[in-house]
Image 1 (spheres, each protein chain N blue to C red):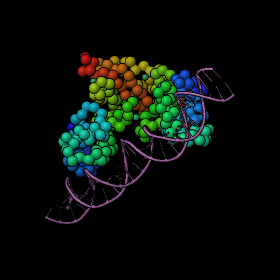
Image 2 (cartoon, rainbow over the protein chains, first blue to last red):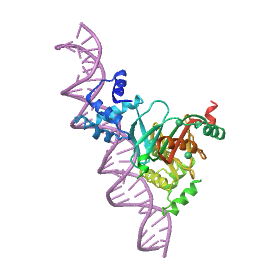
Image 3 (cartoon, rainbow over the protein chains, first blue to last red):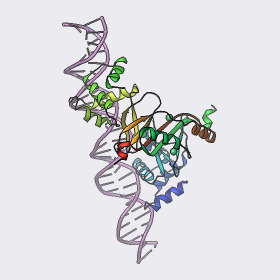
Image 4 (cartoon, each protein chain N blue to C red):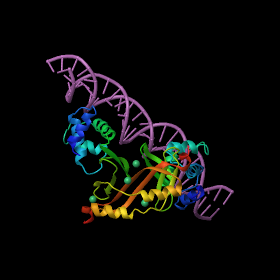
Length: 140
Length: 140
DNA sequence: CGTATAATTGAAAATGAGTTTCAACAATAG
DNA sequence: CTATTGTTGAAACTCATTTTCAATTATACG
Ligand SMILES: [Mn+2]
Ligand SMILES: [Mn+2]
Ligand SMILES: [Zn+2]
Ligand SMILES: [Zn+2]
């Protein structure tokens, strides 16, 4: 999903199209790593130098609300955001270069049935995050 | 693992046994839900009213360092702590009563092989958290 | 096009969870 | 019992995030 599509989604939801928002949206849409608000701020200011950090926070809020971005949880903190795919997906993180890849299609049903039987829980949702080395970093 | 065992672990690692620590440790060890530092503080003060919030933070830090507790990540925030099991386990959370159950034994190897082949990633770690309704809450 | 309206902006101030500092206190070893 | 060193809570501090506010700007409508 492109930056233009994101801006269109914002417009559809009654939000206006501004230079500040465009810079933030393009930055996140084009970066294959999870970014903190401050990182977004620094990168986006290259596109629109007058950008304020407050606007970054406000834009992240709206993008998350529209499910265009998602929060990435890591040992070091949970304040980084990443573009979200559509539908049910999982995050694959490279421990070395931080590249994030979205992965879809998992079959955890057998595992869930087992857990359900063993604990009595009715499983409604799950959250799987995987880390390792991406193809590039593997070779170094 | 009991509160006494936790205190022993602390002692083994050069930490002293104090009334403040004991209150914090017992509180966490006996609560089957993830607790925020402030929640720990309020609960533990029932056991030791002079307890300061700073000591809660400092004790949580030590317990996490010894892997006796773990951080639980949720939509609403990532500041809650839960007793940790030993070895590789996953968290099962009840959406209604917040009860947390630790579950061990999963076979994700087939899934990981698939992802590895498809993305070129070398998978080194994973993080699975499951939520739903516990047996009790299911019946209501 | 103008113009009216309401959303958006960035700066500055405020908030608040978590951390640091520090002097008093207390657990432990000998 | 005493010396040592870790621990404590209060108060001060930090810093990421939120709120406030007056100025600016996108958009709808004539
Ligand atoms: Mn899944
Ligand atoms: Mn596992
Ligand atoms: Zn988290
Ligand atoms: Zn429950």
